[in-house]
Image (tube, rainbow, N blue to C red; front, side, top):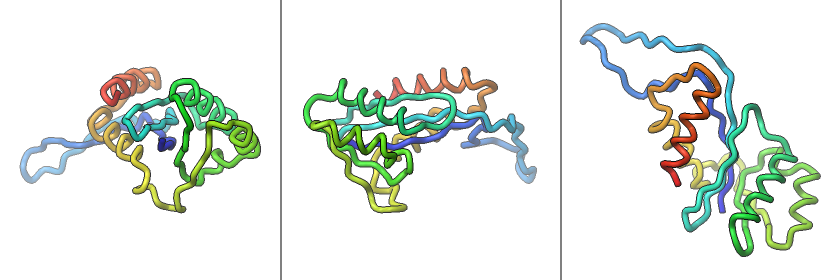
Length: 152
């Protein structure tokens, strides 16, 4: 399975807009950097699992997500992920060493194109959040929940 994190902010994403010919369109949106982060994984069979929260993820939260994966995906798990520091904390390394069903394989540095879950994030940003500007984190989470259902 392939794992990665992504952040979504309240700053809207303009996908398309209309304007009178010769007049540059001006799109107004909230300039707020509040955000939510999602930790997600997709299996080679297409199963999608994710956890979304306000703020960034920490090593212990990565461990809880690994436990979630072990609960919901049968058999041995080879998790392919990037070199983010939260993936390599001492606690994460110790947890993985103690789990016989779980092993990690790291992608080469700066190679997001090798991780298929990046396509999921791009789809959500383009098709779920495109031309959408949430006013609150709660509104953003509701919209993301719709996106996660579409992906599943």
